[in-house]
Image: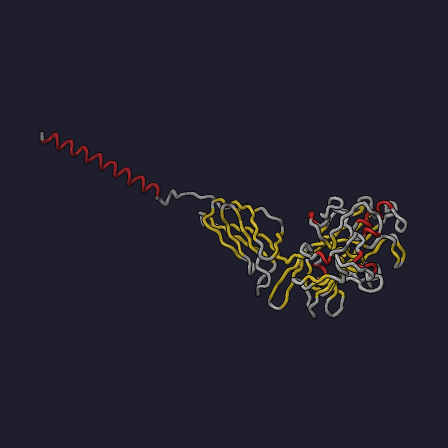
Amino acid sequence: MQNYFMFNYKKKSMRKLFSVLVFICLLTACSSDDDPISYGNPSVELSTEETEEFTYGESREFPITLKEVAYTSFELPNGWEASIKDSKLTVTAPEKGKTGMSSNGTIEITATGLNETTVTASIKVKAFYLITFEDVDAKYLAGPTAYGDNLYTNYTGSTPELYKGYHDVSSDLFFNTTTQGYGFASGGIAISQWNNKTKADYMNQCSVFYGDDNQKNGGNNGSATFAVSYATSYGASGAYMYFQTEGAEYEIDHAYITNNTYAVLSMTNGDGFGKKFSYEDKDWFKLTIQGVNTAGTITGEVEFYLADFRTQDAAGILTEWKRVDLTPLGKVHRLNFNMTSSDGEGMWINTPLISAWTTLPLHIKKRSTVYSIA
């Protein structure tokens, strides 16, 4: 009986010992330096435009995919914020007016993998104060008809008021108009919501040729409000805008520009003054935007064709909003608007010298503060 129990005791002990040895061997195999756990290289997939544009204080989300990533870190322009959560990259632009902030720069994302290697991704960003004219008080709008009766000195109505120019307080930018003599016809910049696309004469000079006819959605991206400039061809026009603060010089990033209805229909069909534009005659209609600094020196010029028939593959008459880069002008105190056409001689131009534009983005640097106006 003793041997029996002794045998059974040893048998159980041997089983336990065998189990312990197997368990220890498994642990040893898992932690062997000769056979480590293998991790793949980290990767980051981020879909953005070449440069993403923000208004001040705006937050936006972008889809981002991280694979084999342990953690991420950021290198940010001053004042910008970024975070990643639930496969989304959230970027927040700085608040307008804060000192030491950067209106543009590059956000660098560094992803460290489980295998301790790193991979980087980046996104270029710009922040602007955006002038869209959507918040302009109704008393400043061209009216009460698409002619813009209140743009002329003989106007006696009260709704809207007699227009004497518009001051955007936040940017300190003043949009000038001629307030004597022939008024708007001598050059100026008016604020409008008219988009009658069928009336083909000067009584419709404040309409833009865009959007649904007479539905007040003629602005860029279907917005309601835009600016209309009545320029000249000889550089003495009242169509200009400037910063009211003495000595202020800022960089204007871009503007969206298109034709007004009077000009489009004149070039399309011809009228009692202007000819019908054609590829045979190689016609053209051009807007020139001139930058001027506080010393009165011209900083540069940007030319933009509102109609181009100079070659057979040219675009013809512009009937949509186009983005025009104004950064070649550098820092400016004032912008002048002049227009020229193939249909004219010397200072006398037969094409209606009217265009429309909206959404002006500016980079504004003053002392240690950086602003942007769009």
